[in-house]
Length: 142
Image (cartoon, rainbow, N blue to C red):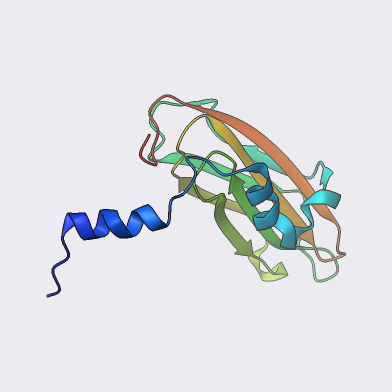
């Protein structure tokens, strides 16, 4: 087994510092494949607690209003958290076989921040929603 000292790890980490939270540009860059700039509000619903007592495991549900037929379905859902060191939380690729455009998961939030979802439909349109979540104890080292 390879042994690495804590000092060596700290030295390497010092060369690659990360901001305490993502910048708006980093969030936009991560969401760029979903054409976030052109995304319209509506069709996407984010369900999350208004206040998360602990940011280590926050339940999130993202649903998109879509019939999920061969002619009209959700292709991709991107999820970002604008206060985390890395904004990209998840990407879900869907097909009509899914039957419903709904994903449930738990995420770690560093601090009080916005959870952002962007959905791209089969017709090329994009839809978005944002949900603020207040975090009392951060989950990413906070």
